[in-house]
Image (tube, rainbow, N blue to C red; front, side, top):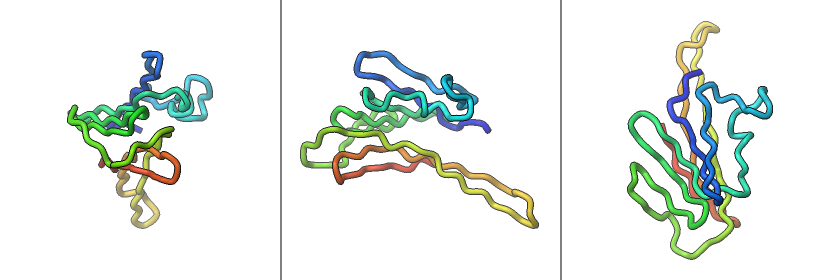
Length: 120
């Protein structure tokens, strides 16, 4: 599977983890690279590819698209947790796969609030 977007996780201590092109965890080869991400210590999570960059900041909840920053909430929130996954759509005809589409979902959860953007 060719990854359209590759993620970079940046931690509060400034260190980073960059997804490999095969999307295979370094600690468990049966899992994706997201398994390796220390979700409790994330500062930012960025997707890069197709000439674009998408970022969510887990310290204040702001998003960035190609370096342009914006908020999707008004009230001060805290304890942002990453939301990231890929949604696959497979199309079949006569029992054979004719196409495969993948969208990326990136955002955060804070308490009962969630904000997620879909990247196609």
